[in-house]
Amino acid sequence: MSRIVYVNGDYVPEEEAKISIFDRGFLFADGVYEVTSVLDGKLIDFDGHAKRLERSLNELDMAAPVTMEELLAIHRELMAQNDLTEGMIYLQVTRGSDGDRDFPYPDASKVPSSLVLFTQSKKIADSPAAKVGMKVISVEDIRWGRRDIKTVQLLYPCMGKMAAKAAGCDDAWMVEDGTVTEGTSNNAYIVKDGTIITRHLSNDILHGITRRAVLAFAREAQMQVEERAFTIEEAQAADEAFVTSASTFVMPVVEIDGAQLGDGTPGPVAKRLREIYLAESLKAAL
Image (cartoon, rainbow, N blue to C red):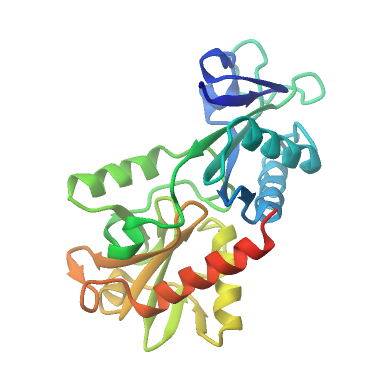
């Protein structure tokens, strides 16, 4: 059966889905997105993703195409129509199509935003990668200055992932002014002497929904957390490392730029945080 996707009010087979060639998301990367995980047929931290979506839209003066209550209903309908019990739901909002290409924004009262959503069915809880850990390389961070807005401008992160793949690794950590900002699609952490260290929030990094939850759970578990920048050299000397994202939850990192961390296997802090995150997030899932 063909996957059913949502396009501007309609649920259609993916082969029939259409967006104008003049859509500003296609022409200017003028759009934002969110990805929400689904476990046991429930949405993980939907409210957090919805609030960040509203913030991204507001930061770009982009109109919300539906209310957040309507967006939740769309998610649930897509889950039902695709029989999705585990995987992800991707949504993208763009500034829509004014019927031609021009740099100035169209009048939002006359040109509605576009909204598309689709599902991805895959096993994400029992991940083989989480059992062995990731290997990462470092790349220079040359992205624009508003990384706190979750835009669809993802070409450089794609290039970073391809550089990692070419090096025989899994992902890349981006470095700016000598310190790590974040991974290509995740927030980055190291652990030293029991303390979890991750970059503080600013416009330099995405304000991860999973990041927020994981740090809250860590503090509830009496783990020490320090929010500050760290270097690649400091990371290579760490006891362990990991990343967080909506699609990978807590994913251990076992090698950075060729330097093995610890014994080269996932560390106890990352493994424990993954267990806690999955258990607690399922309790609150919608």
